[in-house]
Length: 186
Image 1 (cartoon, rainbow, N blue to C red):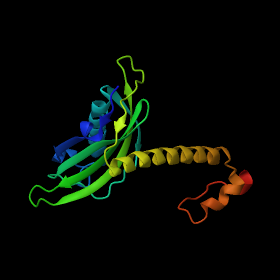
Image 2 (cartoon, one colour; image 1 turned 60 degrees about the vertical axis):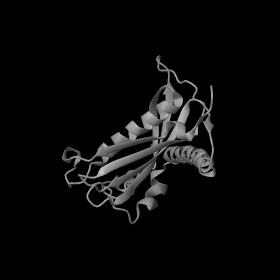
Image 3 (tube, rainbow, N blue to C red; image 1 turned 45 degrees about the vertical axis):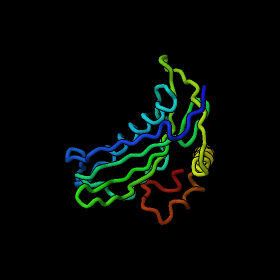
Image 4 (cartoon, rainbow, N blue to C red; image 1 turned 90 degrees about the vertical axis):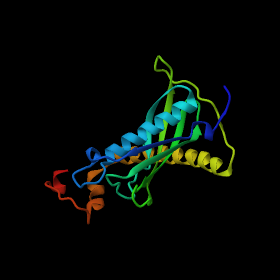
């Protein structure tokens, strides 16, 4: 299987934000943007893999600025990392005001995708050819992000399994919650 460079699968999706995409506050609903991000991640990953790809994880979705009805939403996706059957697709989302030509960066995100065959089994993906220092930085950062996510999940599970109500009461001090039972009920 031949390696493919980053440019091979680079994908841009542009969509006009119409009134039916608005939430109750009059801005574009975050779910609409997430759906479009998933769509562009699928297109980018599937092009690199040459196979159907499914979303496994989504990292780093933080909406930095609202998206307005009437704006063009641009979603730029590139493969940042490949494993044996998985790929990490980095997505940069920007909006463009058609009247003023103002461009705003609204968020970045990272979708981990897995390539599947027609029977639904994972299949190997082509290697990623890194041609620039930035592409190498993206690849290494994806490795670090995955490692940090796994460590964080293990730590949260460990903390959850080690939960001892009496000892953890101090964590609730100065928090926005109230207890309807007493410590003596423990």
